[in-house]
Length: 343
Ligand code: KG4
Image (cartoon, rainbow, N blue to C red; front, side):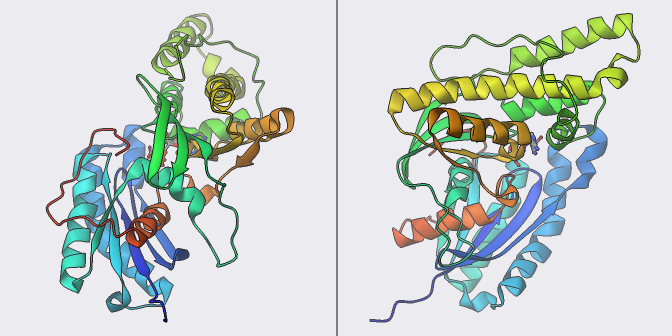
């Protein structure tokens, strides 16, 4: 019997990236993302501006994704969309569009959890013979602007959160520290660039003492801010004179906190296939730490391509594809949700 080709359209709009992707039988055909520069002037995402930009971007982004895939919308099999967590106003744009689009084409809808999508980025295939996905089970460090979690991935639909931040996310801490240094937004890529030229041991910041596999980054943020204030009292040009060292020391501290708990998770579970996902996984210091751990502890490591680390629809599309194979569809009345949950 001939099997039918499955074309999935993935849609992501949980924060400040409007993204659409098309996959054929789990292989990526296109992935188009419109980022929003409008937030740069404010040092962080302004929710109302984000939802307006999504409204402007969603139609051209979806149109481009379908065109670049070389298909027509009538060929689509199902529409997968990010239902949450994220900013409610942003989510509503993608969710409403996905529902209307699927209904107009008479095809099924598949809801995707954004956090599971980040983890599933490891299963994005760029060609039929792409074999870069980690074997199951694996441990995934999920670090983004909104989340920091250690997840045990038993199957695409069976993910166990072993630990998570009790306050701020790692990316949020980096962005806030960058803001107090007067650097731009988002701070992650700026800190990363400066850190490459700095001394990671030049300054020390308080490390949290949190039990189990949980994280905390709000204390570090405060420690960074108070230390900076003190140093600026003695030298008004302190930040300018020490920018690289400050960035390198901050990055070192955050990576150290992340890796300590990850080592603990690997030891506890006995699983030594270790992956990283989410926007902060673009960080070179973290990527280097992964490579060092692979060598020192014999970990098998999985680091996604840069384009699949920050928010993108390819990860939503691939999650949608697996849910499609399981017949796991969603009804049109399922609402968006903002609260952080893995379900
Ligand atoms: O996954 P993502 O795009 O959005 C969320 O779902 O939160 O992650 C965005 C976060 C931001 O905090 C940004 O500063 C951080 O990822 N980020 C980085 C780097 N690139 C992006 N952090 C450190 N180094 C980077 N190179």
